[in-house]
Length: 374
Ligand SMILES: [Ca+2]
Image 1 (cartoon, rainbow, N blue to C red):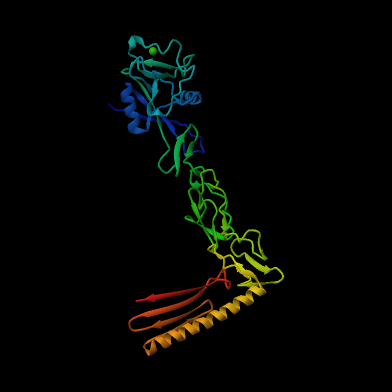
Image 2: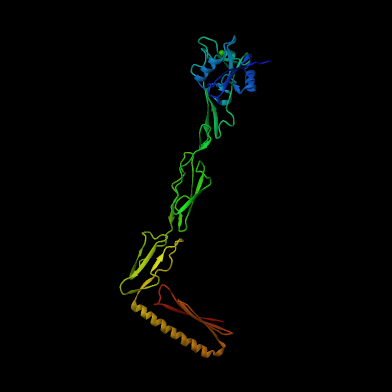
């Protein structure tokens, strides 16, 4: 069978190139043949999505001796609903059917034709037996893979529309949604996976030494153009609270005892500062040293005297032992600011004297430890 291709008016406006066009056959054929013909030479049989398209289609279809054209709506059984091919439309208007149609004569009318003759039935539909011979009404789509970069192409009579994926915009869905510039966090910085801060970009926060991530460590640019969470912030690490100083007091450079805060200690009148008079909160949350103590001058003098007496006692013990053990002992003396130790060593035995001062109680308590090792 020889078919004749005829291009009727494109549905596009003259200046528009991206939209579908309508076509029809000069010959008649049954519904199945008509659809195959449309698919072979164009895209498919006509699908109508609203009354405006229906009216436009009828206006450009020619007046022929047989003014009947197959359209792409059908069903397989009398109890089924009418369905458009391709699932591109579910539309059936209130006045789409001609009077007394669809009448399903002999329960075998499962295809649909559109009337193009003049009169009150022009543009109306009729259910018809599928093996009847009608002209084919076809369309050719203009959507293709390059029509929309990040979206789905949808055609109408005069234009195509790109239905963009989430997070993209533009007439061809070519532009990712942008989020506002992410403000630089105090005492830290952020790094983003992408150079520009657009949809799906994730930025991570890093804090300077002495500061920690306060809340989320990253945010993501969402399809709404907003960042996924609150602003990224770094907070200063805190040192343990300093207890009240006995017989003295301390004052700090900041209200919270956080990184870089320095606290100064002072003693009440009549008391002496033992230790460093100031401590600073370090980047790991540890004070720079032990806090000092306040002791009276009398206690300090007694402590010094006691220490001297104890040293004398140690020297006497050392001399006695050395005398009793004769020359076979070797001796070693260790000393620093906090302790003094005397090591006696014999080929068969070791006697070890150590004198240590506990920092927090110095000089009121002095411990002496004597260890005899075999
Ligand atoms: Ca009918």
